[in-house]
Length: 121
Image (spheres, rainbow, N blue to C red):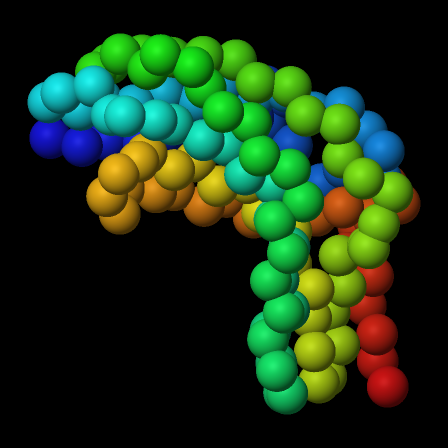
């Protein structure tokens, strides 16, 4: 059984730009994965081409088959999370076990007071 979990320490998913955020990651596999990574990413959705940017990667060294670890990331100052009629920018933290396709994605908001910027035009 392959199981991945990601839990924010304060239960919050909206953060100020530049904030330091903490969360726990855990996994339970039949055998140890070769590698486990935490990725901070943003992507756009909506009309036009989709963009995807991997901003930070944290390599979790020597993963056991079953384990829990705490991770702390410093968020960048931008771009802000926003949602508009034509396009939106979404931040996320991904937990990825390699090799293979086991992954988990948790969306977050990165903007002043952790509130997504709404664009009405």
